[in-house]
Image 1 (cartoon, rainbow, N blue to C red):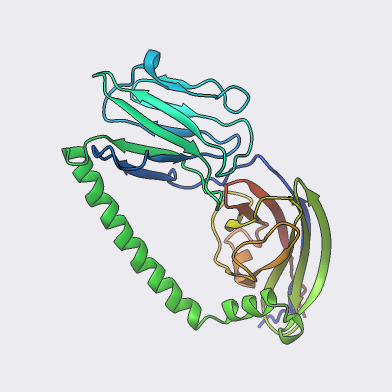
Image 2 (tube, rainbow, N blue to C red):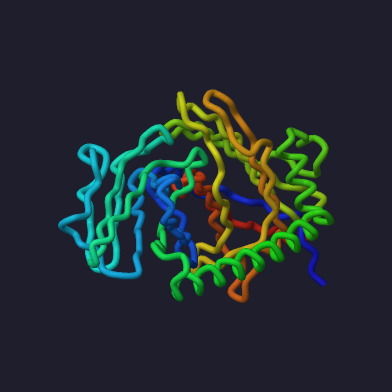
Length: 305
């Protein structure tokens, strides 16, 4: 029988980026059901710097009568054709930045929208617009939305239940709260990285007593006005990009300008296993606006007794 000493992990690469987008299996889409009541607020479309947002309609768009007011210097030229309108901001925006988008459909229907940004930074990748909320397509979409929300709630409840009894989540919570000395981990490697409006200290942690590893990120928000908020973290193989399970905890949900916060990732050593032998893994952090912020490449090194 072979026995193994605790694993060691080498940090092969760390990147701070500002243009890479999180790649989801499905586009980040939402449905927008318009109202005929003139007292209702003009519907909003949420965009992000250098990220394309697509509006999809039930019928063709009239490009000659579709316009975005005040777009120069803020957006690429508006693309309108078929049943779609595409918006591409040239820079990051705030909720105070607002533009009027006037879309005219082939039948002459005029639809106004306010183009702006969310405080959270979350971007609409695709907006399916239904001018008639009682149309057959709109009703089908609403049923589909309800089923998806119900499925997400079930999955979320199941995930919360698993996390309540998860050792890895408990360890990640201790690390995020500054309790490194209360965990079985020791610091293996440390890097300090500086990017646009952010400084990230990365610590790779290993253990001599448990077959687990951890990565602790200390994020300093150096942006003078924008909140920093984590959107997504991913752990996957470098070859094939197969996802691997991990536990994540944050010290705080959002980091104010000039403030700092910790993000902790804990995983079992088995995440490196494959039929071909130990895998190299990529750990990625994405901001709430979808931009990749940090990438860490981990490699397992096993020493046999």
